[in-house]
Image (cartoon, rainbow, N blue to C red; front, side):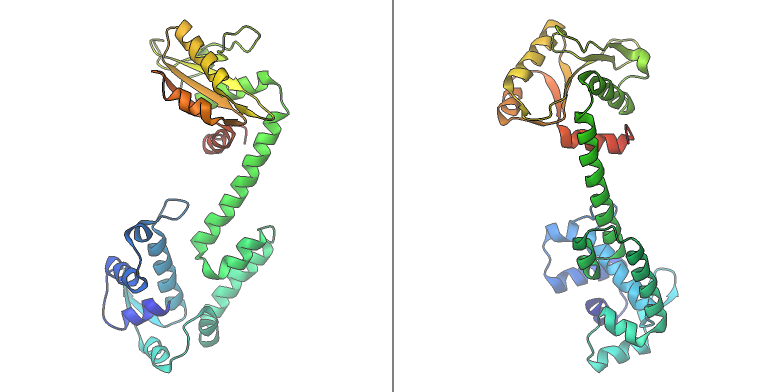
Length: 279
């Protein structure tokens, strides 16, 4: 807020000019200038400047004579000349409108006391958008953890069905009629499902689903899957597990001419959240 207000006292800036000037003031490098919010919706620096400007507007220190145009006013210049620190507390003291707005936000935070202490202690340094993104990430982490725990208590057949549902939700195959087979039994040759990717059945996706409660998928399991693809004259496959893939399995995959996507437990939960499967 102090940097934005001081720059605005020096003249009129477009949003991009103000962003670049603030970045210069803080000595930000190219990576810091281009860094996005976790949501990916906006650059972090742009978001912080927007909220700083909004806070100054709420406190009556700047004016908006027309849409997208902000100018410092007499109150803003007076505060700069006073030498007082331009902080949230200062704005609360000088502006009843800002204080009422800030306290409504504080009341909302208190009513959502389930958020973690780390989020609460950092809320003073985060913009509202960043606080929302932080809360969303915490909730998604809790959901991902619970999803995996629940999946691990189900049967292997349940997991195979789940993987097929996820593939269909992601756009592989038009419906269950496009699932050629769900083997899921002893002697299945390392294949748990086969999906017709196109309506004429010219392109097929082979699936393997390993529900592990402990350990990781190693090279032998991946070699068996590659062997099954070879036996079916196929090149495309997806190997899904509730655990992780050992480094030896990943390095082995880089040595074979097959297009196999590896989905570990963490990515599986992310995809389930993104496509609304089992959530």
